[in-house]
Image: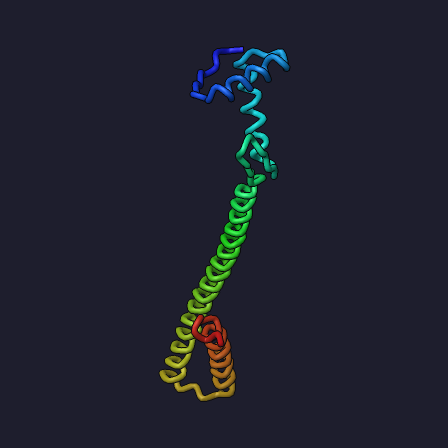
Length: 155
């Protein structure tokens, strides 16, 4: 094994004696015994265990803090996904409004040209009436869809 960092700590004599007894029982060096005991203590802190050590009671949270954090992150992720869906929906509505606005402008331009042509050339015939009615119907249809795509018309 490569060199490992050295960590030192001051401990009461009673604890030092317990570490040395543990090392002797397990056939370990004092350093190996300390490493093993620290690892076991860290593993225990990840489980729901209450340990009585001398006159102290040590209660671990069993990883509940990590579980709560994970649940909060999941909730935030769901909220972010919902917001993303709403943003996409609004972007689609905006695009639809832009298309409807362009169509409405084009139809209005055709209607103005048609009206100018009829007026200049004085064409009061049945064809002119039907073509004008078609343009007006198309204009009203597009105007209806444009107004329904506006956000303030939602009740």
